[in-house]
Amino acid sequence: MKVAIVGIGLIGGSTAIDLRAAKFCTEILGVGRSQQSNETALKLGLVDKIVTKEEALQQADLIILTVPVNILIDELKYYLDNMQSHQVITDMGSTKGIIIDAIQNHPNRKQYVASHPMAGTENSGPAAAIPHLFKDKVCIICDKEKSDERAVALIEQLYQTLNMRIKYMDAHQHDMHAAYISHISHISSFVLAATVLEKEKDEEAILEMAGGGFESTVRLAKSSPDMWAPIFQQNKLYLLEVMDTYIEKMYHFRNLINKNKNEELKQFMQSANEIRKILK
Amino acid sequence: MKVAIVGIGLIGGSTAIDLRAAKFCTEILGVGRSQQSNETALKLGLVDKIVTKEEALQQADLIILTVPVNILIDELKYYLDNMQSHQVITDMGSTKGIIIDAIQNHPNRKQYVASHPMAGTENSGPAAAIPHLFKDKVCIICDKEKSDERAVALIEQLYQTLNMRIKYMDAHQHDMHAAYISHISHISSFVLAATVLEKEKDEEAILEMAGGGFESTVRLAKSSPDMWAPIFQQNKLYLLEVMDTYIEKMYHFRNLINKNKNEELKQFMQSANEIRKILK
Image (tube, rainbow over all chains, first blue to last red; front, side, top):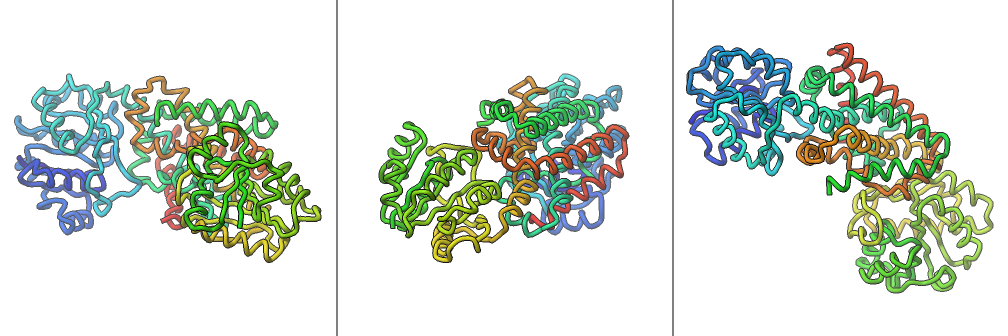
């Protein structure tokens, strides 16, 4: 089997490393988005060769799209329009509803399986690719009943090879959960970084005090704007909801401090502590 | 030398482990705040024996206060009132200005060195104590010119034994930096946990999606309310300032998403990415 990976950054590159190590396929073709990415991906041995979209469509049995979600729909449509009947395609994007809706009536819809491996780091690009990025993490496959069973089986095999735990979800449910849990985490971290950089003009103090919890809490603020801006746009409705709740709670916290309501402040934190029951 | 540790929780207990391993002293006396903590500290071998405050004052050469900041001033005054002239006392609290101001005219002021080792985990209590908690982290000593040189030298030796990097700061500067960097990080994490727990009623989804950045960003929300409520109260003025900036930026981020201002959204995130220049 030959696999084509479209977009060879952190996610695509890390996928390539693990697939190669597991001998999942005989050849890994790369369709990069820039000359520089292509050269890095080749140099690092992530892919066996760089090909055009047309060549990928001629040669690959499985096509994996790992491009940012703003160009994902157009890419997906292009490949679906031109696919051979034995080929299977999946994407690894962080939003699912808008993508599934956009191709719902496509004649080759059943060759597409929507998936979202919940893994990543704050780094991006092919040089950020690492082995075992996906190990023991969760991959969500959406609306599997809308895909061929054979296609779903291949994608399940793909994620099992990456050592992921597979869960199934409706695409819009996925987007809601992603907004309420993962995307708001990224936003709180971006806002934390922007706030600290504005208020704290002493860079040495930031470095010295980073050990007091700032470093880990702000990690996601290093993430790629090109990747995240389109995710936030596409998942806007659920995100605005959860951001409003966040802002309301932050105001409440502020007022409890301001009015010296120590017992209520403790109660607020005790209710936040409940997260320990879910995340040990 | 004999050391007394007052309050044998995460910080006091972890200090005891490292001091013992380094043979910093011949005996470690513990003054616990509850029967249960005392028993745990003894059972885990953190301290050699549990003593009363009076016994600590009779026997210890160095007294280390690791109690929550709301009772720290009273404790510090008690020990200062009754100290022998050769004894040295320090505290490891997260606020410094209010404590230093409270004892500024005490006749034994010079035997006290104000310090803040910037280390911790989200856990608390003696059972949470671990070796090497402080290793390679920063310890801030405040207003050192107000303490005896001999006392400062002993406290420097203490933190060198814990393998910390020592920095010096004015107490009120310390509080400002702590609010702007460490305390706001804790608050953003508490608010994130409270928000997700309110919006997301599907606990399994939280567990499944936690790998997408939520788990690390929410870690500090597991911290002890009894420890943090008094810190937030004591550092209120600087905290309200930085919380207002945070809320303003979160609103701005929300509005950029709401109004589909994609370029400005990216610019916001690019400015947040600048944190990479300080924290590699």
